[in-house]
Image 1 (tube, rainbow, N blue to C red):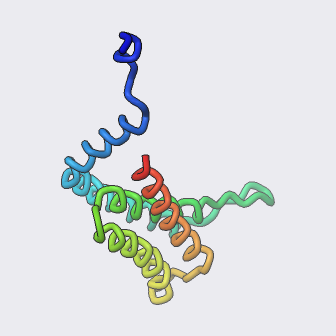
Image 2 (cartoon, helix red, strand yellow; image 1 turned 180 degrees about the vertical axis):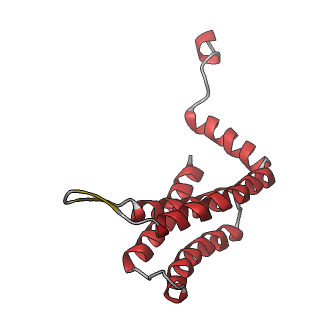
Length: 139
């Protein structure tokens, strides 16, 4: 084997696998970190639902649906990456169920309203988070 072959960096798949092994070894601290992010996610969700949309002339700038999707995508992505085996399906299902329950619960909250598009954005975000987790696990 030549010296140029021994000095080469490992393929990206092997480097990502070692990062994944490191992340799995740090599963508890990462889960605690994710739990620490939960209050921020709640605040983002609440603030995006309570602030009025903005408009510039006839152009409506409304990031509400994107924020819904991003929050629920993150809520599914983190547990799906960190949880192993059959618990992964539970984590993903819990994320999708949370997306549905939070939106349907607005039917009963004073001053809030249920919107099908919000429910769709929540579910699409959760499914995108799951999809990204699956792709990252394949690396």
